[in-house]
Image (cartoon, rainbow, N blue to C red):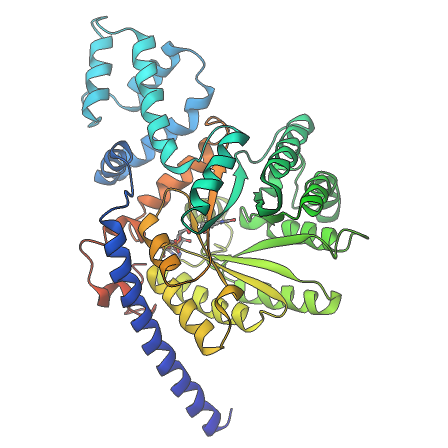
Length: 447
Ligand SMILES: Cc1cc2nc3c(=O)[nH]c(=O)nc-3n(C[C@H](O)[C@H](O)[C@H](O)COP(=O)(O)OP(=O)(O)OC[C@H]3O[C@@H](n4cnc5c(N)ncnc54)[C@H](O)[C@@H]3O)c2cc1C
């Protein structure tokens, strides 16, 4: 690269960084203001998260217990597992539960009463992150958020189905939901719930099996003018998920009309190459896609699974690496907005401010980009982004709690990860310098 071009790049990045800092501080000030009147985490959730944080063993026991709770069909089984996972002398249970478990011993409190308490507590936490159980709830959530200028993408809870009948039910729920939501409808679909045999070892066949159900969902979405995004799950499903999207985009009569989106996870080590390949494919096939850029929700699983199998870990090991890749990919996607609709999905003020600064530098109209957040997380950040005039969408799961347990577990993991942005009580305590530090080995990796 010539010296002149290098100098221009450096000057550009200096002004981009300065603009990122300025926008970030403005966002932070607005988020602090909004924080004063918007609740973030409810009381039970805060207590559960603090409790999980106190000790990594407690955290893993809570997650294991939540994981098996859906399969505990009798109150006795709930109490037995509670005692087993949280022996009275070894674990500091929240006060109400400690009392409950100890009272079952001398028979003062019955197993159904304790089981009821456990379910109540879990439901309180779940309500923080899950918008409702039924399709009707989705409509009222959509209306409530629309009054604040916020759009929604709905996810019907459920993933990795175990039978084709279950996958049929999942697809039908989406078709019904889209019919209710109409043109403002936007849904996010988990590919592994579209067939019981979503197998990375047979990409074409698995994609073809899932395509039948995705086609039904997409057709209904086209009829009413709604949009569909394919969520991204574990790395082993990435190729398969992208293949599914490509097959749908090539469907005669549907491919050119469907408003489809895919997800890119910045924590995957070769995410930048994956985006290059995707952009090449879109250019070659003259198709347009929404691309939601996320950091990735399965970090603990990816690391543990690869280590257990003796494989190379497919994700970055340091948070700053993920944050830096997220910024690079933000720049790539925004610069490719003729081919993709960029959706920046993060609660991290630094990541959000950087994307706004890039959009400004590229002179993109604000409605070219959409900022996305998860339901129940970061309401103050949501309000701050919307107040600057940028489009905001919230990802809101609907459905029964039991199939949603895996989703709930991931939200809890995220909220208690050491370096999580949301954990940092940042609106009250962290300094703007710390929050806005550029990602790097010696800089910001906090979030
Ligand atoms: C609207 C929306 C839709 C989403 N859809 C998906 C989806 O389809 N698939 C999906 O996987 N996720 C999805 N996510 C979740 C997302 O991937 C993140 O888990 C979540 O948003 C937290 O990241 P953050 O930028 O908000 O916060 P931050 O606190 O800035 O980042 C946390 C993230 O950093 C990464 N990280 C943490 N520790 C390390 C480490 N030691 N090394 C490397 N990286 C690390 C992880 O990805 C972690 O989630 C979605 C998020 C949103 C807002």
